Image (cartoon, rainbow, N blue to C red; front, top):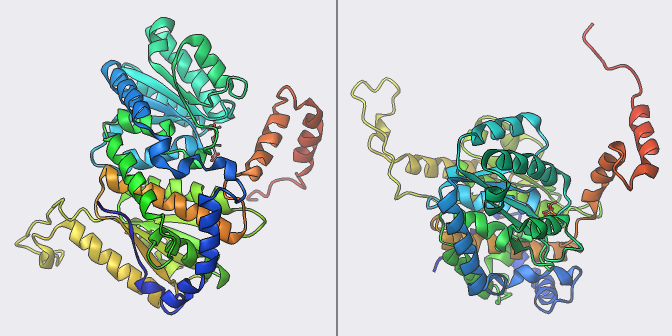
Length: 452
Ligand code: PA5
């Protein structure tokens, strides 16, 4: 059984084990609020027990649905935004055992060219839709579903399309328009548990169905999360890497480090960073305080952001997320001419070069005043990734409580929606329409500045 580990070598002297140990009483308090369900947002803790969130009968139903859909479709379009797609995408992209080419995404953007491209890509393919929206009313996925449902119905007919659409949403038809449509049309449905928020939902049907469709072992994924959950029963901050990570973030934030940069060294892991950004950003970004979660992918971004990280403003720390597939030997060949001077690497695996690049980067950034730590996972298996997802969720909850916020709400995301609906004169927003439209018009202080 392998669980994430935390390498803290490059935190010293900014953060030592003694500093972290001194936070134990605060960690204990946050831990108790979580397990005794006494903290803010206690009604949203359905994610804390992965085995209960994904019991065997539900897993069987999901696996059956995935295999039924795989029999009828080569490609699944997951329609969802934020927590309704990022977790699935993170796992599917990262897992070598998942076939990421079988899963496409929509509803995460209102970009017209993206949608036009996707529609073109789907033509002539056997495809299905998994529409995921807890509220069932989010504009981006609702618009995408309307467009893609019509395309599917036009291509295969309304009857056949019903068999190719699965909806994952709130179980209560009074709360979710998507549930009402799904029930009326007779789509297969799965529920987003009411006590699980979008960004904590990857280990519910929200993430598990697309991950199963991509061919991954969802039992091992859930087991990994369950094993990490059991390990988190120990709140000792020196023995619990998830809590240690939460405490370190807190200490560095108090030292004026206002940005956490999560860095991965394999492009396939990048959506884990996107998922992490939402998890921590939406959970902690409240009361005009908290860390800004940012992400980079090395070595690629060392050639763009590397200069800033090494010598820019010293208001950040870095968390590497590493898993080395050293077993995957993609060898650098020998070249008798050695014009590039790289023969010292002949017969070396590219992963070994990547590992040295990472080691050199962590040291250089520490020397440059960027304290850093590394979350290590031994391999990219379902078990390891399930454990990693839970590690982050648990760390996020504890970190949010230590920061003094409710990690489980997101009141701020409504502001843009209200303006958008008012500007588009959505029924129910008529009263705000004139005022918001006037404010947008009046925000124009002058002509655009143009070359002249
Ligand atoms: O974490 C959250 O709650 C949000 O990011 C949601 O996941 C996102 O806004 C999508 O919401 P819904 O699933 O209701 O369409």
